Amino acid sequence: MIIKIFPDREKVKSMLNLIKDREEFISTASIKFPKIIAENYYEIMKELITALLLLDGKKAIGENSHKEMIEQLFYYTTFQEWEIRLADDLRIKRNKSSYEGKQIERVYLENNKEKLISIINKLKILIKEKLS
Image (tube, rainbow, N blue to C red; front, side, top):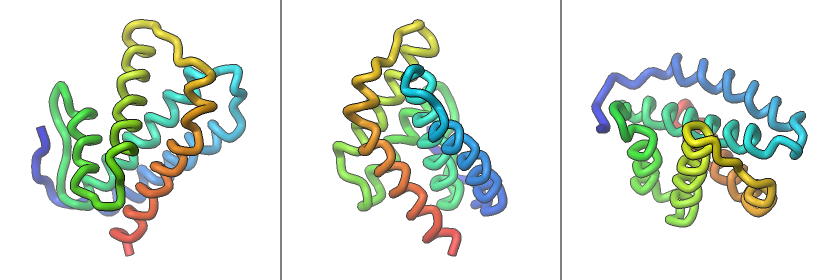
C-alpha cells in the first residue's frame, strides 16, 4: 500500500550516502559472486525508489511494498516499461535467492548490468532534480 507522508529531504540525503557505499562495494566485488552483486543492485534500486517516493511524499508499506514501489515508476515518464519490468524481475530474482536459496546466474548480470546501471542513473537524476 502506498501512503502519503511528509517529504523528508534529510533522510533522502542520508540514504544517498549509504547507496554510495553499496556502489563502491559493487565496483570492487568479483563477478565470482553474482548473487551478492545482483542483490546489491536490487538494494540500490530499492533505496533510490524509496528516496524518490519520500521526496514526493509517499511511502510503501505492507507485504507487497517493494513490488508496489517499483510499480510507482510507471508514474514517472522517465522510465520505459521494459526498465520497470527489469527492476521487477530483479526483485523477483533477489527474493528467490534470499528466501528459496536460488542462485542468480552470472549470465544474468552479464546480460543486464548496463541496463541496471542505466535505471539506477535515471533514479539518481530524478532525485537530484527534486533535491535542487
